[in-house]
Length: 278
Image (cartoon, rainbow, N blue to C red; front, top):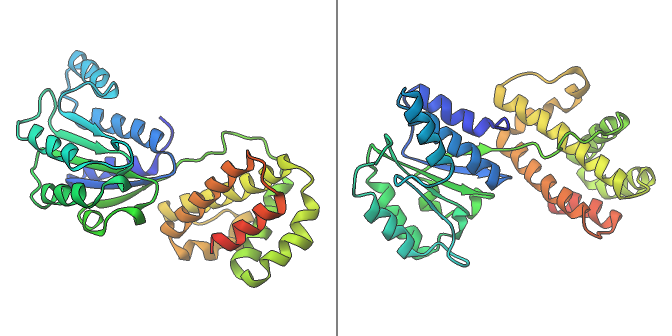
């Protein structure tokens, strides 16, 4: 399981007996988030019997246990009927597990009708029911749903061990300082400093992967309430902006890195990064 600070937060809540009844997980990788969430559900439902727990793990990870329901949008939306079916099913006690559990993928696809039906479910939580809403942008979740969930940021490093020449880290650090501290000159900085350094799409990828890795390191430090290593001390001001701010930067960088794979003009992409992420 790839390291997941969000799922670790759920683990901590469980160990401290403070597990909420509903969680909103904002992530840059819904698939990995779901896989790690299923690992968490295996853990909290363990019985202590090795044979039984192996069966339980297999059923949960294969999404084939009656007490786990995973809802995905039916077309473009999660429909009211899907939520009604969920509520009806959970009138019974959990089978084979301690909890009845539901996961709503692409939770931003809840429409007004389904969200209202879901809201009634959330307002009268039962002790043996756990709910998880997975989204790539919590701001797209209807406020009444969001307010009744504990929000968890579940971010994954997407660098995939790419080997990047060391000099790009310093370039990335200087770029971040220019972008964050002297924003009005960032477009000019792109033209005068960054563009001459980038000769092809590979080097553009080096730049944004380096920026991504720098932000990711700072994000991890913000979660752990730890200091930055000496080479990143000049960016310590970003810690004061908080993990939510850093999380948003990482999400936007993920989009930029995806776009690099397509035929996008290099200068256009750099300028878009400066303008749109503001």
